[in-house]
Length: 69
Length: 138
Image (tube, rainbow over all chains, first blue to last red; front, top):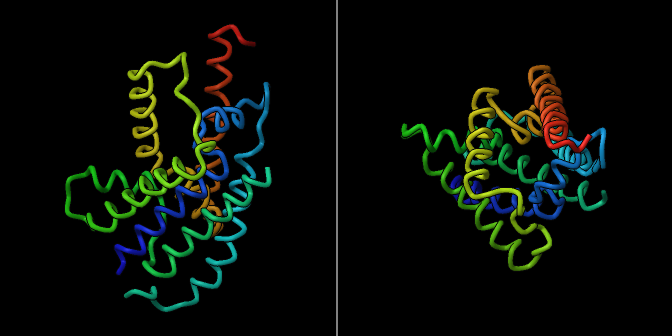
C-alpha cells in the first residue's frame, strides 16, 4: 500500500513540475538570471507548494502516526 | 505565473500525501541517492516513487507536451551528463534540493532548510552570472 502511495505521489509531483514549467531548463535558468531576462515562475512554484504543504504539515504533525503504519 | 502557482500547489499536495500516508519527507535527491547507495534501505517505495515520476513524465508528454523543450542546440549529450553529475553531486553534498529543503523543509520552518535553500539559490544565481560573463553575454 505504501508503495502504491509512493507511486501516485511520484506521478502527481511530475505533473506539478510539468504544469508549472519547471521541466524546462530555460524557465529555471530564467529565474536564476536575475540581472537579465528574469522569469519569476520558480518562486511561484515555491509559494504554491509551501502554502499547501505548510498548512497540511501543521495539521498532519498532530497525528501520532502515519495513516499506513 | 498562475500555472507556476497551481503546479506548485499540486507539488505541495503530493508531498503532503506522502507525509500523511507514509510519514516521509519527499526529498527527491535523497530518495534517488538511496536507490543508488546499494543498501536495501526501503528500496521498494523509492523505486516506485521514481517510477511514478517517470510515469508522470510520460503522461505529460502525451497530454501536455508544452511542458518540454527540445534539447538545447548548444549542449551535447555529454554536456547533459556532466550537468546531471554536478546536480547529483551537489544535492548529495547539500543533503537535499528544492523538494526536500525548498518545499518540505521551509514548510516546517526548518532554519537549516531555509538557509540551504537561500544558499543554493544564490549559488545558482552566481553560476548563471559567471556563465554569462564567460560567454560574453554581460
